[in-house]
Amino acid sequence: EVQLVQSGAEVKKPGESLKISCKGSGYSFTSYWIGWVRQMPGKGLEWMGIIYPGDSDTRYSPSFQGQVTISADKSISTAYLQWSSLKASDTAMYYCARVPDTAMVIVDYWGQGTLVTVSS
Amino acid sequence: EIVMTQSPATLSVSPGERATLSCRASQSVSSNLAWYQQKPGQAPRLLIYGASTRATGIPARFSGSGSGTEFTLTISSLQSEDFAVYYCQQYNNWPPMFGQGTKVEIK
Image (cartoon, rainbow over all chains, first blue to last red; front, side, top):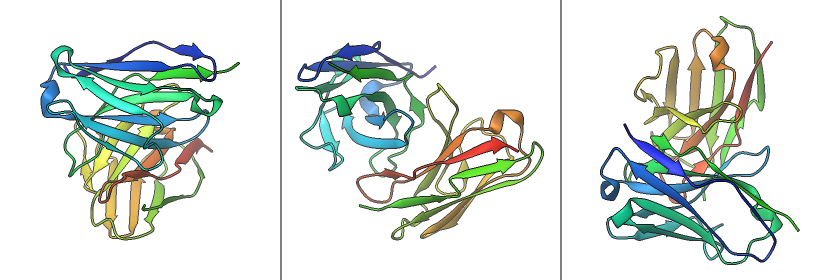
């Protein structure tokens, strides 16, 4: 069974750093892309970027380029999303997602989501 | 980037009735269009990709059509579990983009 299990909810202060994780299982982790999708409170879905754990090839949506860093450690089948300096506007639910291919950037499996709250 | 516009924002439908949701792209996305369903407190679920191909395990009452810039998701006979928010998403160009969503509510 394909599973993406994300790390737990976080409460942080503005300016702090954060790294959240997404562990894949039940499939070949290095054969599929992993994406990150943001959902701000009461709002829609936004693609942030994708990474290919096999070689760490990474692509960012322009709105998120330079704002976050996506990485992966294939040895432990885990992808990461990190911030160096959080802002209140980073408060959102973040989903990791399995993506079949760069020619088909859709989500066939989703993580359960990680809620990030940034507040002073 | 391509802008995806969904209509209506909210659709009120009675159980057993047909629901028709629209999605328009600001430029052609060929058939590279997906639909997702999201229920409160849950991650989204893939319903349709390639504009008209149902994902694994999706009931036949869900169907997708269209190509180019105009797309439709039809739910032939709404069940209680179908009341949710539906998003379209283009994947023809980078970055992939979602529409703003259509909420299907009980009339």
